[in-house]
Length: 636
Image 1: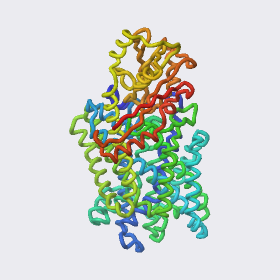
Image 2: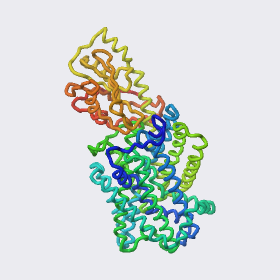
Image 3: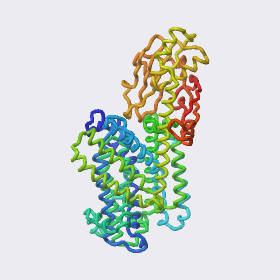
């Protein structure tokens, strides 16, 4: 793996069961959906920002060349170099994403580090802000193309957008397997159409090729002060979606994603931006909507339909990413348990999380109804993505320096400039805070606060529970002196620490005064790897004829299914008859004290999260008829 257990970058973990062609096409539909819809609004918003208060005037040649130059070099430096060539090699057994990068960074440092964990939580929290804005701005910008077909559509743009978005989120529970096979082909058509439309207008003004000279971009920012920074913030819209390259690494593998970028995505984006720039140089009046005005009038309606399909696919990719990120966060102990439903029997990665789905939908609808058009939303877009990208750049430095053992000069030479560029972009985007940029920051801050509260509260609860528990060795010695009444069957007691007797066992003895013939202390552990091989999932230790310890390990990309795992224990010589097995769980009733590390009001928030968390029975897929819950009261 790249920077994984062996610390060697560059191993590719493409799924062996899928052909390269299938992975190549699939990656175009999922990985590049978001960045592929950026030409709808990125150049327009950047040029309008560059013009400042003179938005009704005519953009100068230096403005157009400067903005196009900044867009092209952003695609080259941030997407090509940072993501496609570097970060795609920083995988953990084939998986990517910011939480994977946190795991690699912790491994590189050699111990759990709070600052690295905090950076990871911040990046993950900001992703939810991006997940709410992407569907809103993408679908709105596509549907707005109807205004160019005929002004009659203008009053219906907002209702049409709302209907499309609600329908998109409503079908999530049915899974995307039935329609996902069309994502790649539709997006291939989309990128080809974009490239051809841009190429057809490059001839409008061939001086647009001067934009490949980075001096035009640097000079533009240097000579335009605050306006230049505002334009730079809008330029970043062209690379939003770059995180998806890394997040979806585990679904497609490194090589298909890289080949898709170099053979289709990058050329199509480059041609389209050059075409938009050349068209504006030749006819500045088309600044109203330079993307759709690349097309002849007869092609407008088909293009709007194709663009809408592309934005729906882009939104789908972000929603799916939010589901995957949430599952990782739950497994890593950053969020409470939430219901996870599998929507495909063939692909374990296709999941649906109702709480996440409807939460994002509410956020998207609020953004659409408050901002009303894509230009207004553009001010809110970018801050969350720039902050996340800055965090990934810093964590990537830790990985290449400490895990891959790069020479410090090489690490600084490659990642130093990227880190500086990201923070310049972040500073430029922070200028948009009052114009709507506060929205993703507020969303991210709320999610980050909830993650910190859950992490801190869980630690306090574990410490408090441990203080009132009985050491397991002491309990077993007491059974030798005074054996309890025995009943046939097997009892499985879920426990987080095998050194102490589970509270459910103690309460069962206290109230029912019986002990089963066979008793298993089961601990479910989260590994710091995406998935755990079946041969490494089970650890079993027999204490005596009546008691055993069992540990089941699951990776942070897996959903724990205890019955399936217990059935798989047969391979290790362990047999569990589900019809004669009872699962004992502790259901803790929490009371706030405000004295154990968090203020009283934060205790109440943690308790609310715990109360609304998915039950252990549902989360671990336990058979409801075989579960006994024992209540205990704990003050935190």
